[in-house]
Image (tube, rainbow, N blue to C red):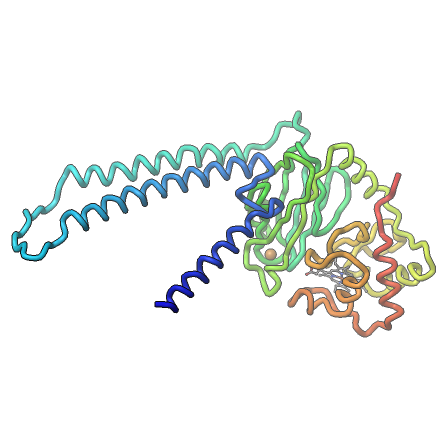
Length: 341
Ligand code: HEC
Ligand SMILES: [Cu+2]
């Protein structure tokens, strides 16, 4: 008995831990920060209410029947045998149909509302998203810039994410803004989201896509419109030339080792990569590869053994480089910022 109690406590403890995990507003379905997320939360409430109602009604009838009609000691009387009841059968067929209609009407209408393309007067922003094992490419066709793992958006304006996959199926989910949508190879999918206010919202891949699927994270950073416009301009006018002597050596090493996979704009490189995330203004990103805080120490660890951070990642190890060379790469990459004008 003691053992059962301990087990029960453990389960309750784990559930508490699990559900309080949802209290992070940057990653929460129950604390939405966007229109779509709010509409979806209303559907969650509606279906939960219907399910609760059904459970309660069935449980009450069940408990009543079990107690009221139980066999009592000494009672040998055989109750009246009933076989089939048209009235009851109609009742328990019609009630679920009504409940399903109550659920279906708002679900279908919300789905259509969410899918509706925004009018030009709402100033929608199109962002092309491509999923790779295990990172995200974000391309802004109107502005002509590309970034990875962190997508900047203006708050209050609808964002049309146009999605595709480079390899296997991935899925794009930003719990606090709404979702989700699959990214499929050879097929375009669209998801329209809006952030009510500036802030950072966490995103995840929710389609098992390989060893590091659970590490395929991204961030949505919503800005005030003016701030967003400034960010776009700073990315367009970026200067990726190294300034210090050490960074210049890093820039040279990037040209030698990295540029086949990583593009860096305005760094004087000829080849523009594509197999890896674009590293333009990399020093401004908050994380490395979506998982590590972006600081020199973590960048060193990433370059020396990416597999250690993200098993199965397509980024090769550069452990064979000398410590000084790694230092130079780190110095250069961390110095990459958007233009300040
Ligand atoms: C064969 C292609 C390839 C080469 C060569 C390569 N990388 Fe990568 N790199 C990748 C891929 C793929 C990723 C994404 C890994 C992931 O997140 O799963 C990546 C990720 C990164 C990231 C994290 C980017 C982000 O958005 O956070 C950095 C930084 C990086 N590489 C630096 C370098 C440097 C510096 C070199 C050269 C010394 C280099 N890479 C060479 C393929 C490559
Ligand atoms: Cu994925």
